Length: 347
Image (tube, rainbow, N blue to C red; front, side, top):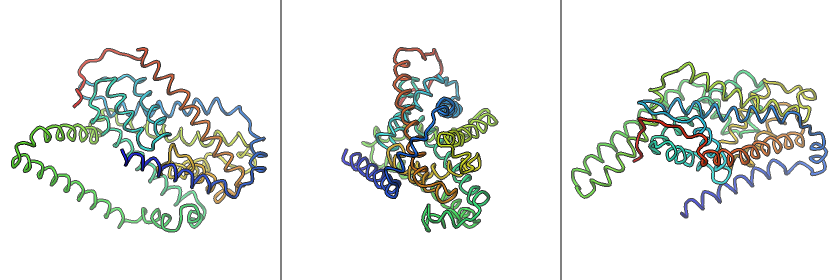
């Protein structure tokens, strides 16, 4: 319990520090003038694209879950995804657990197995993000040295090192070493079970949970429709880029500073790095990374960059906080309930 409170306090501190960094050099007067230029016709397409991105994520998750006769409700998975985002606004990373528990209870599927698929999904997103980081750094930024003030010298050098063959070999060796370590731990547990019969019950429980988690983690090998899975992944990230591009029109950034899809891709990648930090719902980290990237890469004044970050983050938060309770209520009322057979049990 103390650890959870400590994590929450640390996440709040991270959010507060980055939020202060984002607004410290921006006068309230300039920010108010910038907000006065805000238009609202972009909200409807933004709402549609944001909900579509979450629905596509649920559909991709479905591809990882459904095998061996398991059938799931798309709307239940969609509700679980939205619930995860909402919980993350309170406690970072707890949303992944929440959506696994919610869907597991609703669909009578192992929660441990679902958690494994969620971890796998996050790993896939991390791989895509790293590929995009390398692509942006190598091909889209005219001067790679521009990224140093944004990420810091150490992080920028780390991004640069991702493009080297030596790093790829090191990562491969570490991955093999991790797999070997897991196998050794498994063999040790077998020995402990033999030496201490009193641990049989505990061992069986841990082994069952671990096995189901591992099944979820390696579920990518059981994907039946790879073209659809890849298409969904591309579509999710394309929606993210659109969600960055559409609000440009809110402050006329597309005409005044020439921000288009190329610039939206850069800001999307940078903001993804910010959201990856453990702050509640990306609060503070998103604002700082977005405003700094707009200033350093595209010469957008800080007041306009901060205003853009505040508006986009706030609108997304409102969408999630408004839509999720409605979806939960619909699930509770049984609107999305479907008869299914061949489900896995929960450990």
